[in-house]
Length: 492
Image 1 (cartoon, rainbow, N blue to C red):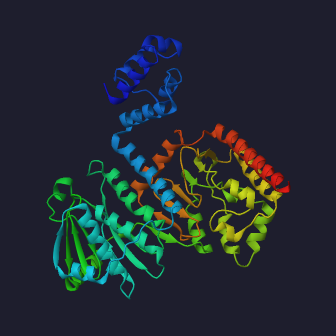
Image 2 (tube, rainbow, N blue to C red):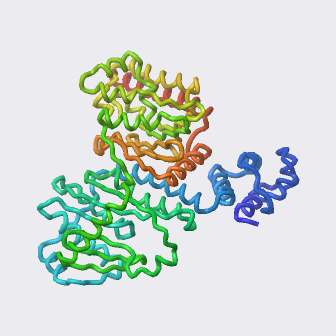
Image 3 (cartoon, rainbow, N blue to C red):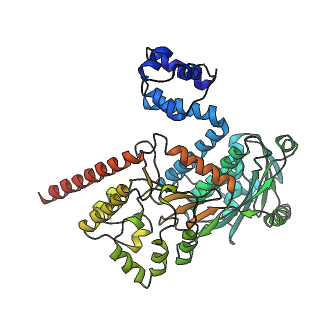
């Protein structure tokens, strides 16, 4: 027996049926169903979905059962990695939604002087560690020169990133954050890919919500888990005045307040930077930046696009595209943007959201930086653009999946692209963080993102290809009716 088969048997019993009755009612092979319920066989996911149609369970219970099935089939680490990826997307949504700092603490001069008076001090509680990190960051941000921080990935670095983001309310506080990521070689370390995605979870949300320079570099480590336990101090944070050595155990660290020691550590970690590869490759939204992005699309491998707004390149009428391409200010950008990828229809998966469609229909304004380049002034043009996208849905020019906005939130100016099995790109088109896109050239991570999206399109978080067409029509009609009612109300 397994957790999956136990849960399946429980649901069958609660439905008031048994294996023999269910097999007969659902026209399922009785031997396969019996062995599945006993944990002796693992059939296809379609078979499990078919069982769920005949037992009385909610959609959430069905997803729970499907999750247990996938853990049984693919392993706990793969499903857990998918959870981490999903949380990355949700964290970016939440951080951008709550853009203003919720807190910001300043230490008085006496407090900082007292903190620095101790050359070496140990912190062994959550509150002590938090206060120490805040003191260190406060002094680094007050440096008249541009602040600079070096660190790896740990529970302590997560606190640093949180503090830095909260401190960005003051635009004069600019810094460069160097973070070194030690990825696991998955063929040598059990659950290594899960650990890699968990590390990425720490750095990606901050990359999409910071105004500062964020330099992330990675290298593979071959040491196993036993070797790592032999380290006296696992993690570090280095500024111009301080060195923080952090234990793997939460809330255990030593703070060294000495500029000479800090300088020596900075020099050493500076040498390390040369052997670490850039994890993120930032590209701006210039014509050259977009050309680099589009160049990734021109291959025959599977391509996945995940975006919070329907694809604009499929919405804008051809005559307007020509005008934008001829524009002396944005022509280079527009040419690159409208250059459609050369990917076969059955290999292109397009997952999109509807969060900003109502705002677009009501005002004609597009989300993020696109609003600077194009404005749909008339209601007729807005309707034509949505109809153009609808035609592409009906023609199945891609495999389209609409995000179920009630169950899953995505920021409209953030998206992800997966290129084959060797590259994943994270795109930003927001006004607040218009750095364009960052790409991760790391095959293992790209493969995990590709499998996540393959799993996503089979989940309750997106509509099926057929449902997407129906839901699109329903939502657009609903939006148009609401706008018409608002216009009539204003007339009265």
